[in-house]
Amino acid sequence: MELTQHEARIIGVLLEKELTTPEQYPLSLNSLTSG
Image (cartoon, rainbow, N blue to C red):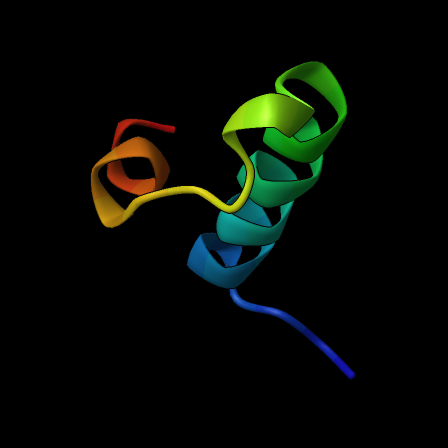
């Protein structure tokens, strides 16, 4: 399975935010867009 650059970035943002701010997880669309 190959990811596009945008897909990989989205997954990276989700993983990073889950680890660094678990109390704010799941993310809002605004948080994901900012990432």
